[in-house]
Image (cartoon, rainbow over all chains, first blue to last red; front, side, top):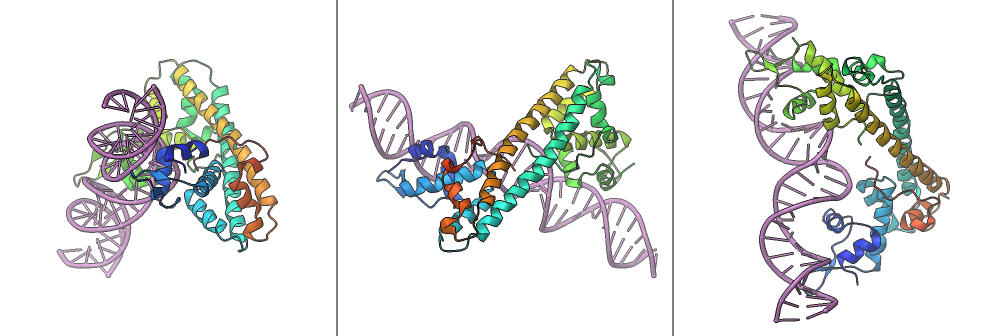
Length: 144
Length: 144
DNA sequence: TGTAATCTCTCCAGTCGCTAGAGGTTCAAG
DNA sequence: CTTGAACCTCTAGCGACTGGAGAGATTACA
């Protein structure tokens, strides 16, 4: 049996995060030792590794919840899992398109900087006037 | 003079967001009408458009605060503005590298799906076992 | 002038996925 | 037996908004 610290180390997840996952129902309530400390078996380690990996691939915890409940039903069709993954791939691709546009615009801003004063600074000028932009990076906000 | 709604429309920013920007000091406290409603002039519209554009390019509000205070001092050197923009470009590039790796991995997951049952679903299998991954998408979490 | 529709006001709570801190308990090593 | 690390619960905070309640202001039209 693993304590929460060992589990965290084994799965590459911080201790408070594990407790958080339990709280929001991503992990089941853990067994407890005589002194009320959480104890985990191999199953939970596998589940946590799954969660970790899915998070690394950018899946939301909501999507992961769905994926987990699917993985508990091995006989069902995998169409649902497939479509969650496809949606994620689509989201990643959309972000890529957008980030590439940002990269181009920022590059242009920085490359045209003459290293003079603010008054003739291209960075400030472009920010102040969208029409100075080369291409139309779309006006949705990028969460960084 | 513009009401908050007109200002929002003109700058492409939602009304509560404008009030939020005032609250955290990105925008100055607005003048008020006799009936206590906010009124804005051209200057604030320009400032808000600047903020909006910088947000579109992924700058944090903290960075924008710095950029705004720089743009208020036209005689100073633009080195600081330049370095904020360069840092942003670097951040965007790092995210691009990471997102491209995610894209590749998700593509592989989805393409190998045989559309059978969960038991032999590649999506679920890969998520459950990182060693099935082709390349080493790095284990930092992507905030989407 | 009346009234109805639309805006605007303040304040508070919620989003996502954690992260950090306070203040206390349990456990393993020496 | 003592020290110190790891654990416990609970609460609040991050960024950048977003949404709702309930009340007041303004505008359009009859």
